[in-house]
Length: 516
Image (cartoon, rainbow, N blue to C red):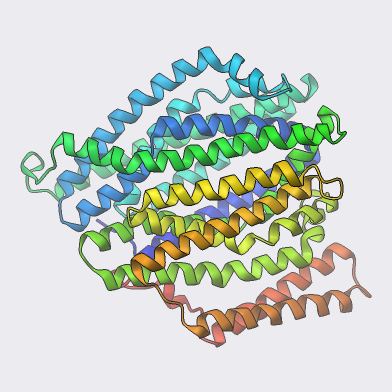
């Protein structure tokens, strides 16, 4: 088998994530410019309900597959790893069929109780096939991640996005004459088609891989295995708190999508304006904020099996190294992005979406940007350590702060949607601090003074270059071009400084398996 170090695995996922993000950005820009933010708002209002059902139907098992498979591989028990996958896949198929059937009956009543906008119903109906497709596909992804072979999940993720976007653009053109409601339905259908193609592809790759896997076992039937009862118990012991965490996130996401538009309507905006403002918040401001989550998600995904493997083998120093290195890399690249968003929020919103007014909200969100990135990476570490209950309670704390912030801050006339952004930032801060405290208590991870100070000083230098270049170039070039050049100049200076100071080197992409 060919597996990557956790940094190499994260790099593979990062590259695919960048490709997906770039394609997604181009798509998002095209959609907003072609049809505005209202259909996006309708889609984003109902999407959290869909994700909540997906989370419940997967029951946290894909992540459990990744962790448990990695543990068995670390112990040299490939037969046990394959048995875990088969049992988990069977459970996921049963759960997904049950929840799909249930949802077909309760959807009208459920959506009517959640939303004042009747246009969301058919948009949601179009998503329902995904409740079978996604859990099954996620099981295969969990297997490959547990084997620490990230290329297959990365490739299928890219193919899914390409299919989704090409289909969406076609359906937007086809359905545009039929109004905003049908355009939103088209966005849902394109997502489902992308997921279906992804499932077909990953299953085909699994069939190819399965033969090679069995060749590594002298006799598959005689391989050391775990009892079925024990596997099911361990799957749900890990999966249940993970599910609670994700259900909490999905419910909060659903509550946000309901609460923000309703609160805006109470502040005097009509139903169309509220949907448009929420579409701008979720589709523009949050998109800019989450650019670096391509890196943090990649790190978190790669960390779960790599930390589980190190813990199973009793290699505490490797576990500590991987935790510290992941957090250091998150800080190294999250900090400059936070400053760029603070300095150039309006310019980026204008360049990408032709909505410079969204920049104010982006700036409020940017206050918590670094903490969002640290929270995501630290979640991966905690899950790899098996501390899923800690992740759950920390998520609950963040959710309470976020919802309370939305309730009280959006109503302030001077803030409105920016009040929601402030609530998000405060939530990111609380969750990241709680996560980091738990990781320190478990691993004693350490970041050296220079690993904190040098990136900080380099970021200050980057900010100075961006400000100076903007003032200088404003006399000669147009606004958008000035912003692009100043950001690139500042970031190149940052990369030069962190490389010269030894804080970043391409050696991190080539770490040996023993260490990384």
